[in-house]
Image 1 (cartoon, rainbow, N blue to C red):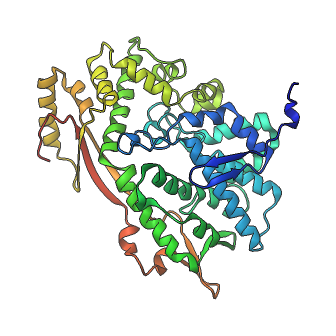
Image 2 (cartoon, rainbow, N blue to C red):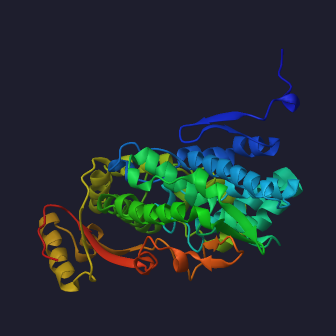
Amino acid sequence: MQLNLKHQNKRKIINDPVYGFITLPYEIIFDIIEHRYFQRLRRIKQLGFTHLVYPGALHTRFHHVIGAMHLMLQAIDVLESKGHKITHDEKMGVLIAILLHDIGHGPYSHTLEHSLVCELNHEDLSLLFMKAFKNEFGNVMDTAISIFSNEYPKMFLHQLVSSQLDMDRLDYLKRDSFFTGVSEGVINTDRIIKMLDIVDDNLVVEVKGIYSIDKFIVARRLMYWQVYLHKTVLSAEHILVNIIRRARILALNGEELFATSALKPFLYNDICRHDFENDPVHLETFARLDDFDVYTSIKEWVYAKDKVLSMLCSNLVNRQLFRTEIVNQPINKNSVVDLNKQICKSFSLSEEEASNFIITNQARNSAYNPMYDRINILFRDGTIKDYSEVSDQLDLGVLSKTVTKYFVCYPKQFDIHW
């Protein structure tokens, strides 16, 4: 007996390790999840190479967006229970918007965001994917696109998707804490969502939830230093960036490199915004590109003729990562020059080639930035104040300040005083 797909049950239940059972509320949600564009998210790690430090951090963007959609459904239910009118189209639109907010991520998520495609970040690519979905699913995508782009009249819907207290952040903190085992990132998403309300078209948090927000802000700060900006993670991710940069230099100079069919166009061409906007083939190619394309190529490049590419790939594949020094002042340029000379001599490389083994950069951490947008606290008398004005548990002067640290990564066999 052949199954009639028109009558297929699309109200599926997903067993999520963080939240338990998640129900898909609309058939269109099932159809989007089943789409090849969306299924690619199963093949993109949420935290790039963080699993080299925390072995359990192998969860994917697929896990994350399903979880964020679940939290969005909870938030909409809470707001409706407090008397706020949210239409069927708006509810469906905001759920689709959060479901697709990360669909533009490339291989290894943020790590290669600016290495394979120029002038476009993952939000730009997510919007292009949403417009491509419209060609298949029709006008049902219009509200989602408008909410995602912050063009919809009800601003609070966009704030639920993208703000300093959105469903994206609530899920990734709780989920990343779960899979890394870093308990400092644990937050009470249920409590925070239960405290949400709307005043003058803006998302607010009832004052009863102030301590849950305190924990959210502190968790975010700690997770950045302990997980996202961990020195070993920084080393691995920047080695990957240097690998792709070196491979692209060789490719653009005409050297034949192994690459999968999805990766090859991005190595041998400068593909930028106007290319994506003018020719849909580039989005289709990007939609096939995932972690496996990059890592398969890196494994092959271990045996590349180019010495620099081969060494960098070997470092990453065999977890022979660079030493990372983090300091409070900009890295001393004279020390970098001295190190470059040592690498040149030890590895028999030119100065330009040796520069691939020295990484200098900055790490920035801002737990709460009231200049970006605010977390508004609603008091019982109806007054609203910014979170930074009312929290008495924390030094908001410290937590709202962007902390910048400087780091340098280099092979461990060299001993340099920074």
